[in-house]
Image (spheres, rainbow, N blue to C red):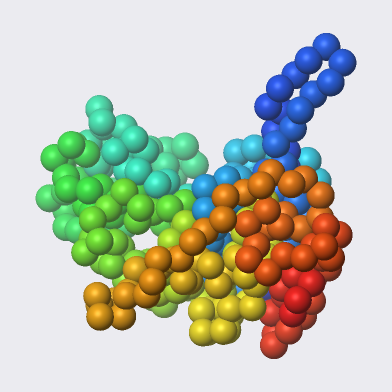
Length: 311
């Protein structure tokens, strides 16, 4: 990757949570294990995987909402791991999953957007213009500023959440499942809005989702995660058109067809056996053999990295 284009780099991120603590022993849940990827300027990177794969944990570590146990995060070459300054916080923002809970119901929209500017000590004389610009940038007009969140539809609330995320002109926005609480038709509108903001404002996005179909529509680069481990990462075209890892193939085969006439026979998805050694996907992999009881190494194939013995 051209270092001049690199905006953010996550390097060997590791995180585990205590799930049981006894007098002499603690049990841990491994949320992330040596996760590495980069985000270029003016790029959308999709993090995809089912619940518990570590997607949101990555976003929280980047934003310093939680601390990493190991690894590094670099923003424009500066190490921001577990130490994001107030000035750097203006460069990275977040869109939460459900705007019904992320927007203060007691505040009018103007107050919700202005709050960010107050925290960062913007002069009062500049705030109104910045608020109006932000609300227009997401496709709403000034009349929405005097409404409360409950007076808006789900899609309009999410647009307000996006306006709040971009009001400081950040370099990078972490979008944590921003479409999962919305109707399908509204999801497409939000996806198109994010793509437009990338093109018009040059904002990069980390787009977190469990839906590979959505990620395939919006991302330039895809990172597939399972149990806190990167299974496969590469350009959208490579990963979607020719998946190499068995887990990526399973995610794609599980997507509903565009039309009923293309419906395939039901795919049997194995339950996880709970086997703790070797490849993280061994318990559900349809092609697993004894060799999978040993950890695979990453292999570079067709400009992407794949975590599997059989590529």
